[in-house]
Image 1 (cartoon, rainbow, N blue to C red):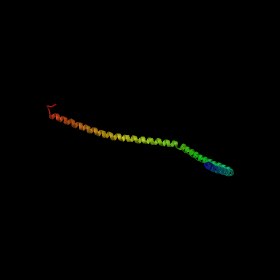
Image 2: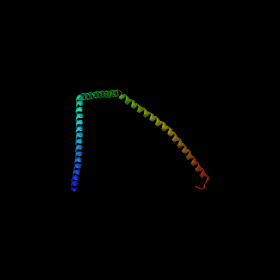
Image 3: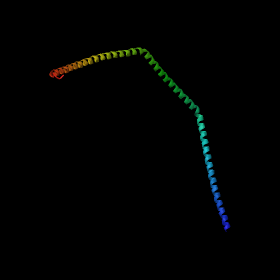
Image 4: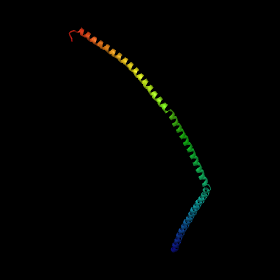
Length: 159
């Protein structure tokens, strides 16, 4: 019996391995089918996309060209407007620059006259104040000298 149990054990083990391999084979076949289905789906999507863009690529290109041409026209209009503005500024400046310069020089001359008048007024005012201070200092010096003389006269022996 032991021999039959041994054979039975070996057969059982072989059957288990066989079932595991069959299961592995089934999983591989499912994986293969799934991957092939995904590849087929991608091919179908690409074919559909090719059909779609084949019908519209020319129209899309023409639309893009038209938009760029419109942008170019707008850019040229802006350039012309800017150019005209600069030309006008130059023209206006040509007409007025001499008068502007003369007016500026006259303002500076008038400012210098005002500064000279202000300088004269300040000088006269401060000279008067300085003269007043000098007169006060002379009076103070006279008083000091007078007091010193009185002090000398009152102390005859202390010189």
